[in-house]
Image (cartoon, rainbow, N blue to C red; front, side, top):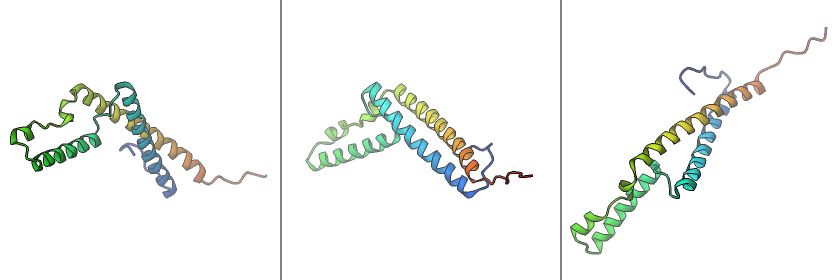
Length: 128
């Protein structure tokens, strides 16, 4: 929840808001990754990709060392993430931050309003 908005009082509403925010963030991330792949034809420069790339380079250097490669040959093995253009990394950072946070916020607000409506008591109708 954003710092300025009040916390819901009902625990059911709190859970619904948290679940909606998490699901919206996951869905937005998946959508962004598929859109990035459609536009650029490659995986986005996300944190996950960066970690996987570093792990693969480390394993490649280790296997090259076992195979008897020279220090120069091992030093020539580079991380493909280092060759990624800076503008693409910046674009991904902005898109993922803004889009995911925006969709998460919308989902949380909608869930809070919807769950609060379902959970709150309504007064009995006046049957005068």
